[in-house]
Length: 70
Image 1 (spheres, rainbow, N blue to C red):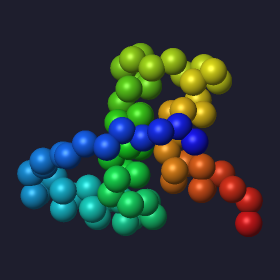
Image 2 (cartoon, one colour):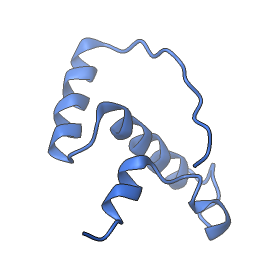
Image 3 (cartoon, rainbow, N blue to C red):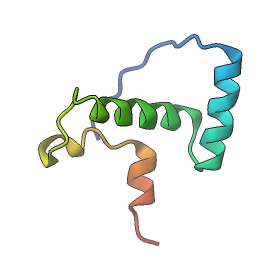
Image 4 (cartoon, rainbow, N blue to C red):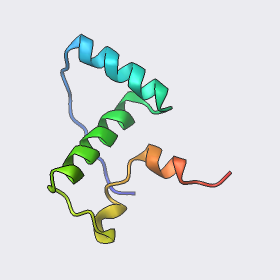
């Protein structure tokens, strides 16, 4: 697994509450939800490579967990 950069994020309480609910709806932590949304936005904007050479580093923990077989 790639090392993850830690940083402090200050966010409006209303946005945090909405993210918290959205994350719960998708069975993700808030951190995983934010990472998922940022990754999706980066892909859609063409700022990261969508090819297979970069796909593993762009997977969030929740993506990896959802791809595991029971």
